[in-house]
Length: 224
Image 1: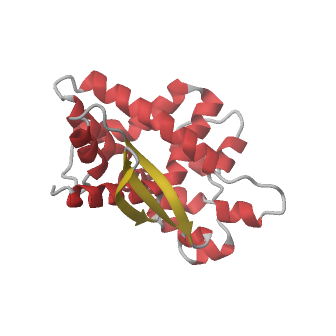
Image 2: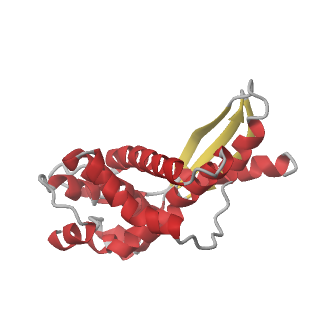
């Protein structure tokens, strides 16, 4: 734990925040000591990550229009990027997983690593405040912006949103309609709704991936 704390570059006043951030639901479900999973921290970390990245690119990319800002933000906070950041810290070696999950190489699974990275952001935010969380996030995000690399990531959600925004009265929403499988191999199913009509469905190993696939199907049906 101390080794990871050094890599993170932040000294915790309450190390239990970091322990919680590293606790996968598979471990929590098997724990006899009431361990809590990192899912609530992941939720909070996702929000902190979004505001930090949004604020930074708004202030430092003044020539980019709103649509390009959205695409840049999406590429920085997508599962692929967060997994890479998490792997750079060696988070997988410190994850608290059930024995079954670890045997199935859950410590290498992109969705688990990405979720843990968001949870770590939240743990720093709760322990040290927004400025410490900002420093941590920008350590990874800033080099990506200053030295951009070709990205294969396609942000179908932003593309769909830009099309729908041409008609301000239309409302777009994503609805989680189901999930299958054990914790170590969960699969999520999402529908994208235009007003009250389903215009696309998608599935994936994370909710974000399922939403992207639903948006992709919607764009395909719309002829894009």
